Length: 139
Image 1: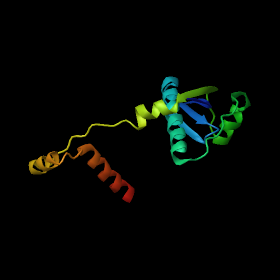
Image 2: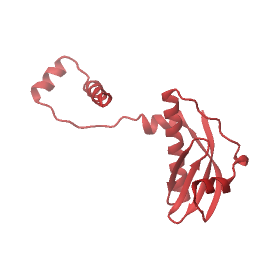
Image 3: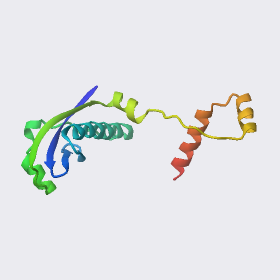
Image 4: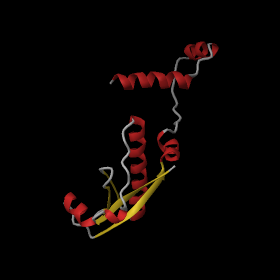
């Protein structure tokens, strides 16, 4: 399902700042294209985390109701240029591709341990994931 939120783009000296007023969320990029790409990633990340945590997801505002001057004043920035654009992302698809994607890791174990584990039909990836999760959650 496509999620769409208005974002305020402010051109400043070093690029563009992007603010999502509905989500209390910000990102940036050196160019408009980079700022938009970062905005999509940022929006997908926030909505994905809200959903995972069971938190309420705010309704997007009508972009015509957003006052760019008020937003820039609140942030205490004086942009060279400002505009509002809708940022859209299919959060579920984006999360599968960027957040939930598995990465390949190479590791070394003693040969005898490898042989014993293989004979027992142990799934190395599953065991490593379970051990890492236990370590991370223990912190």
